[in-house]
Amino acid sequence: MIAVRVVVFLAGLTLVFGILVSALRTFVLPRGVPDRLNRLVFQSTRKLFDMRTSRARSYAERDRAMALYAPVSLLVLPFVWLVLVGAGCSCLFWALGMPSWSEAIQASGSSLLTLGFAQIGSLPRALVAFFEAMVGLGLVALLIAYLPTMYSAWSRREEAVALLEVRAGSPPSAVELIIRFRRIGGLDRLPELWEAWEVWFANVDETHTSLFPLSFFRSPSPNRSWVTAAGAILDAAALANSAVDVPHHASADLCLRAGYVALRNIALFFRIPFDPHPEPYDAVSVAREEFEEACGRMASAGVPLKPDRNQAWHEFAGWRVNYDAVLVGLAAMTMAPEAPWSSDRSIRRLGRTQRRRRWSRRPGR
View (cartoon, rainbow, N blue to C red):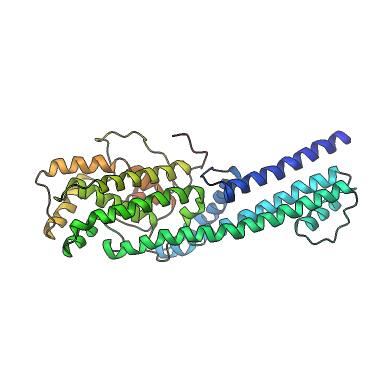
């Protein structure tokens, strides 16, 4: 009997320690480290939301349902932690001499919720009760401190996404962005835009892995998404480098690199597959005909274009190949609203496949 109690004690201690490590990775560790329990909670909640959205008749209805996905999952997570901590400490109480499992569970619940109605008894059991109360209060305190940080990062992200609607339309379009800058005589100010979005990509790279639920927090407007905004900026920079006849500026190159590095890091966190070393002539989801149509629209609006259209296409595709797969995959995972050259092809080609892909530890770079 003593051996059984020792095994149960060690099992309960391991469970509580595992929960503390999970909370540490989620709330404290300033880097993106996937956690199995977090992944299981978010995947299980996503299945319930997928069942709901599968019956939706329009994107607006799906968007309303998915707007609750990240908040609900985030609130379910500490509830699961508390339940498991209670289960682990029930094992500790029983192993330390509680007469029955019923009394051990009552003692654990009383300690975890600081109710104080259960008779604890001996000093070792009292120490477990004190420890469990501190863990329960600590988890709640961490969640309270975590939410303002997350919403602050969300607000910074959405400010730039909202401003892009003025510059690139709704849904955002790379072609529309360049045309609008041409209309106001502002093509020479595009480098300022690339510099601002280079910083935005760096912030998104950091926050959407260390605060991974942010990836699923949706924009206030159903027609906006951080994924489609990122795609519009990257495509606009690629078009400016390849097809638009303006002086080349290094800020466009830096914005493109910051963008595809950020999207790749987020894709690695969520295990979205892509080729980390693509060749310039690898296929992309944007067809040559779509590129030609975009150039035709820009030419009709008075945008100066480079004369060698064939070379322009190869240069554009050479940039696009660096972020094509991850952009489409993230658009599918987040169920982004339809936008040209990003979520429109995730809807056609990927459907639910990427959204159901398992998350795992990010491989080394």
